[in-house]
Image (cartoon, rainbow, N blue to C red; front, side):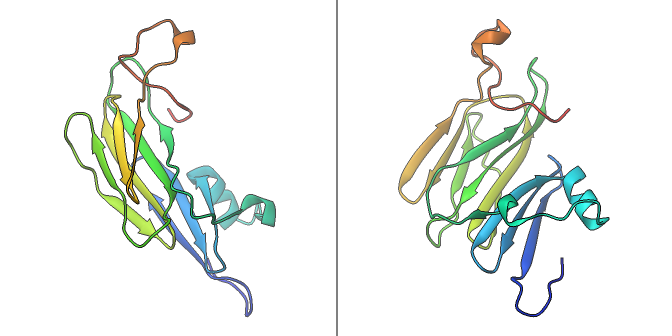
Length: 151
């Protein structure tokens, strides 16, 4: 994206597997969006307002997206704000350590696998995201939790 004189610069990180993007603005704001929203914005169908951006807080609290139940491989993503200089480490229960990408003061990590717990180490803190199937689906905890909005 380009900007006029005096407007903050916007940088974009595309996570191609999951079809999601993070954007960082040079004035310390960031946001998440999906491919469809990004296409609409590029075509001028939608123009994001200030309410679409979040101020960077420096909190080490990962967020998660993705997945599908039924023990099939799917795309997953964890992301969040980067409170310090060092990128987080992400480890899947199966032992894989997918790469972490940093954009401004936000980070993201995507991978393709069956649902499994993921551990994020960030700024001396450890966060375990179980990715277990919610009880309302009537299955055990052997698959996924969280949004499964992309299929």
